[in-house]
Length: 365
Image 1 (cartoon, rainbow, N blue to C red):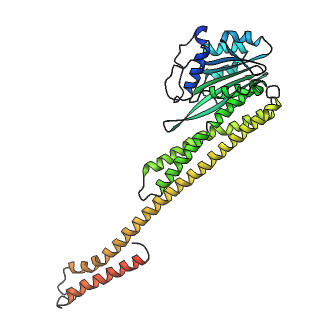
Image 2 (cartoon, rainbow, N blue to C red):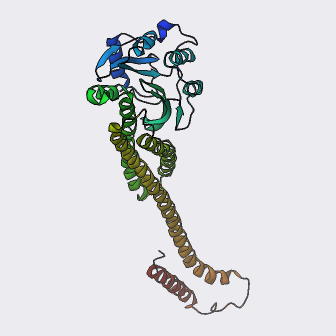
Image 3 (cartoon, rainbow, N blue to C red):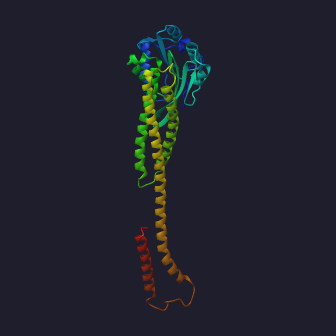
């Protein structure tokens, strides 16, 4: 599911620079509504913005201007990237002094959810999820957090973080606490984006429950139940480790997470916990639905077998009686009696009727 960038292998600095300010905003707005599988011409640098220490936005800057901006003591920078190539990551490493191992992980979008400490900076890997044409697609976001910078690197199925950035800019008094408030905004956006996925799964499960108790067996219902179970398992593997990461952000790293923001990270932790609990509950419901479906199928087969056995028993009685007269004997019972044939027919009707009555009363038919 991972999309690779359409750019060449080694862009020049002009390619790696941020677009003009107006172009940034329009690009961010468009990417929030595009399907994750759509092929777009979105630039690798989605935004590169400088902020003053009071949380007010200074404006868009180029990548080459990052070091000059950080040379001013009262500023910090927020950079958003989308599937960057190696040359662009090396440029960011030069500007921010990022660790080699973190840059290597950011270039390869197949990392587990984790948090790493490199000196006075943090490197986070967070799994993202998005519904694409009725199926669950996954992506990754790699986050670099330092005392004066925040860098987000998106890979695969994920929405633009432009709404999270705008929300943070609307509360400059909190953004003045540093780039860690931007980290809170991004993590909160990722977690909140999973709630509609859970809601869609729940609605589909309710519909599938109706199909389970339908009169006719539908193989597609069982297949979709299994697919949902598989997708929820992958979603849980993406969400569950996020609890440990946010728990660390709540308790540790005082040089990067001020005490004023720990309550906000606790709120994100609560949201992650609820999402994880919802996933676990839905997985149990799916397991129960699959078990009930198999039980209903087995019950239906047993009912069919009971009916077949009942009709076979009723047919066995006349077959046994009439088979006597297929034997080649000269002296057969009742051959010389004129009432023998009607009596035999009456006997067969009585025997078959008795068997039918007994099977009907025991609810076999």
